[in-house]
Amino acid sequence: MRLSRYFLPTLKENPSEAKIASHRLMLRAGMVRQGAAGIYSWLPLGQRVLRKIEQIVREEQDRAGALEVLMPTIQSAELWEESGRYDDYGKEMLRIEDRHGRKMLYGPTNEEMITDIFRREVKSYRDLPKNLYHIQWKFRDEIRPRFGIMRGREFLMKDAYSFDLTAEDGVNSYNAMFVAYLRTFARLGLRAIPMRADTGPIGGDLSHEFLVIADTGESEVFFHKDFNDMPMPADGADGAEELAAIVKGWTAPYAATEEMHDASACALGDDELVSGRGIEVGHIFFFGDKYSKPMGAEVQGPDGQSQPVQMGSYGVGVSRLVGGIIEASHDDNGIIWPESVAPFKLGLMNLGPKKDDCVAYCDKLYADLQAAGVEVLYDDRNDGAGAKFTNMDLIGLPWQAALGPRGLKNGVVELKNRATGEKIELSGEALVAKMTA
Ligand code: ATP
Ligand code: MG
Image (cartoon, rainbow, N blue to C red; front, side):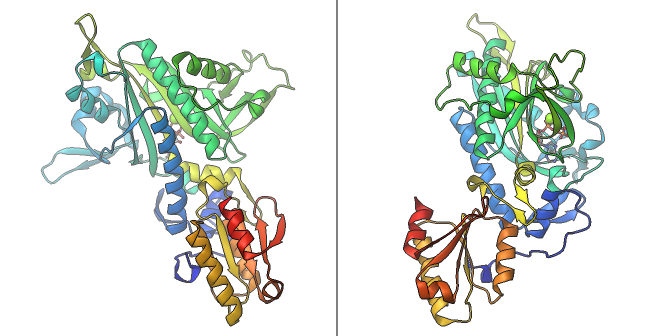
């Protein structure tokens, strides 16, 4: 992408409304703009990051055997009256009336809707287990939307729903999602710690929240220092026993958010207990027949008897993760994207935009990089070198390549690693090779 043709409205000054780094940097890097409190438009650079995160989340859901669907954002109130949550949910639910006077709502979550889809189609235990998920916008009329997209009113969530015959199978489905979450957050360059959680309005008795440790997190957290270097599960571990063993390993050390923390029950010494703040990026629940029973989602078991299915639900805050990743990875100059979610891998800067030979060289290098499949953002504008470097640091692409008249004379491009600051000089061909290695 040529920057001269892109839409990247960066800001030089820190916007006064932004209280935390991710909000500030997302505005300054031209990723999002606010429409109304807690409601944002995603501009091209932000949209690319959101899509990358979404895709990693999707791949790990698919790998765990979940099946992608897409449910609407607008729901009918009837299903919620059946489950009993229409009245319980309170003011966070945006209630709407259509032209016929029917009660509708903008979905804050989808337990009711998926339970309805399931009960209409599945009648036998032979069709179980099933796990259905979608990645869709949600609306919650948060009392205090803040920190940009971190606590929005409209936000993108991945939510999965599992259906099993027995509680034991249901726990296995829960474990599969638990492990998928570990893999997902690791691929996003994050260390997220699972903490036993309160089940809140979703209900049930088994639940974990996944928290990314960051000073600006909304929850206070307490955890064993062992979490700082816990090994990730090996690829291909997907049998019930293997999954249970991984979950056991990851839930054995103490970890609790402030609501669940009990200083007297926590036996850790000062040298073992770490306290800090965390951002909730995922939350999983096993709640048995909480919805299947009132809504009559039953299947016939091997004994011929009908029984309510055992369900779980599994959320990831996809849009919140954009902010979470920035909170975990930035410096005074801007964002530092992990390669897996970077909007482009490489920023190419022409430092001699008024010199024909520099233009010719950079244009050719840009074409070669594109032909090799490298995602490259090419700063071909007439700005000065200083402005270009500042801008590249701000938007945080993992690699920056610069070429000016001096480099051209020596036949070298200067390549900088955004995370380490390390610089090397190499030929254009070597750059293409390095970016595709
Ligand atoms: P919170 O405690 O942060 O309000 P929650 O427990 O109500 O979240 P869940 O119902 O568990 O949220 O939703 C699943 C995930 O969706 C959360 O783990 C979080 O990452 C994300 N999420 C929830 N509310 C918001 C919001 N207002 N803005 C952005 N992401 C959100
Ligand atoms: Mg939660």
